[in-house]
Amino acid sequence: MLNLVLFGPPGAGKGTQSQNLIEKYGLIHLSTGDLLRSEIAQGTTLGLEAKKLMDEGLLVPDEVVIGMISNKLDTNPDAKGFIFDGFPRTVAQATALDNLLQSKATAISGMIALEVNDAELESRLLLRGKDSGRPDDANPEVIRKRIREYNEKTAPVADFYKGQAKFTSINGIGSIDEIFTAISAVVDKY
Ligand code: B4P
Image (cartoon, rainbow, N blue to C red):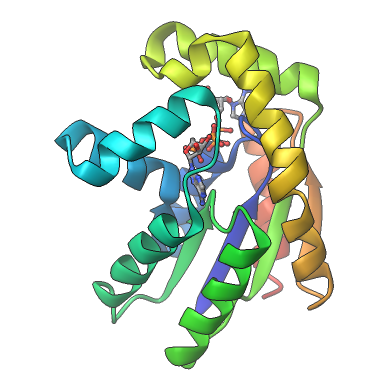
């Protein structure tokens, strides 16, 4: 199986590049952000709890997102592989993902990290916020809190995969096509 972790701060282009990867490699896309927004849209208890945290720019508890990913792995037993987009976002989530995949006799092939500076992230997210309807994209203070949350809790996940020699960094500034060409060159080696 080809199992990719697409990594980077909020607004780095993970969701955008995932769409290209799905088309080219036929992988199943698992975005914890999308799964949470779907729970919110359905008005579930989980969604209502998650919404409070997401609107403030905070991470949702590890056990909630790990449970969602576990369910999705179970409902796709014949997948050629998965793109993990926005997950794992903490070292606890990374450890849980390794254990889940090991129980299915597979593993992460590699992590691809998109590098984008804070000023560019903020301007991309504010631009998206104008028409996405996402409350977490509309407010500069919430965006800065999401970036702080990333630096404190999520950035260490890169070291987890560096320790397994599975980490590759890519410049996330440039056209979407240029960045996808650079990502594809890495994926083709796996
Ligand atoms: P996510 O849905 O994962 O959202 P994101 O990080 O903001 O978006 P992404 O990085 O995919 O956006 P993209 O760059 O593609 O998370 C939202 C919230 O959910 C989190 O804050 C958290 O509360 C919660 N959550 C999710 N997963 C969790 C987890 N595992 N644990 C705990 N909590 C979790 O796009 C951004 C914009 O940039 C777009 O408008 C796009 O068009 C643009 N763009 C992309 N590439 C570009 C380029 N090359 N040039 C110019 N613009 C570009």
